[in-house]
Amino acid sequence: MTTLVTGGAGFIGSHLTESLLSSGEEVIIVDDLSTGNERNLAALLEHPSLRFVKGSILDVPLLDELVSQVQSIYHLAAAVGTFTILDKTLDSLRTNLHGTENILDAAVRHGARVLVASTSEVYGKNTKIGLVEDDDRIAGSTLKNRWSYAGAKALDETFAYLYWMEHGLETVMVRLFNTVGPRQSGRYGMVIPRFVAQALAGEPLTVYGTGDQVRCFCHVYDVVPALRALMAEERAQGQVFTLGSSDQISITGLAERVIAVVGSSSTITYVPYESAYGAGFEDMERRVPDCTRARQLIGFRPSRTLVDIIEAVAEDQLTNSAEVSVMSGGKGATDPESALRSRARVLSAEPADHPASIRWAGASQLES
Ligand code: UDP
Image (cartoon, rainbow, N blue to C red):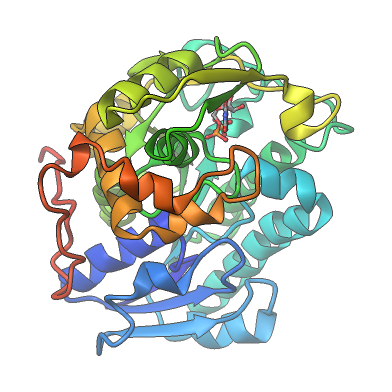
């Protein structure tokens, strides 16, 4: 069984690849290293069952060649992160829309099964507590760049659904709600790696807006087994699944929790949205999934807590101090030296070794 992971050098993709290799699968990664990083694959690049191809999902001949060699595709490659979407809006739209179409076209030609990663952003301004798959999208203006990401991903889902309906392509669509954990970079805007880096450096945590906006954070180790189970499940075909935690926390609450867990002396500073993202930015007030569908079909039930997540991210950043330094000079700049000086109690235990023998650290938590 050979599997293609698009975006396999990214945060989720690298964990997924590790998990697949640990079960003896052959894996091909295609990644243009735009937001992914070869460092994420450091322990895997020499693995005999892995082929890494630096390339774009906009390269149709390349995709055709790669897809002809596989039975299944996890399509995770995308332009992600609020800063990325706002800085490179048109390029991001092309990648997220045409890239997915290219993957689906190649999959139809070669008869591969596809899992398409989508996002809770598709719900837009819907603040319902417990968003389910069939809930309405409340779309923001097409003239506000932030919403172009939601628009592209929503169309990706529709594309995949229609390829299933009209071509019989085996597809499953997964809406990820704030997946976090080791290796996630703060460079593109994601809040947890940013707060942790700031806390480790003893700098103020930059809360954007009022801090009352609510999110639910799910450990990547809980998400990866669910992706694999949905790919394997015949009854998942042609369906959408929400995947995430339902534990709500405000962003101010998150900042306080990070400071407490890291044992930092940092304070919290409030930054207006306009300063963080530019004029006219609209945030999502609340995003809370209801994952009953995934729980009933594959036993999805996240087991890691927010504290587990913060500890894992802090340990990862201290082990690989590059993450702390990538934020230097940017919003909430941090100093790696001071981060290392403030090694907090999260490091009272020695950091785990990077997995050398492809024993994936996130064992499956799914119920049968
Ligand atoms: N956020 C923040 N400070 C940061 C980065 C993000 O307060 O340094 C906020 C952001 O405005 C949003 C929330 O944290 O309200 C989650 O942001 P993220 O980009 O991680 O995910 P998403 O907005 O896609 O849920």
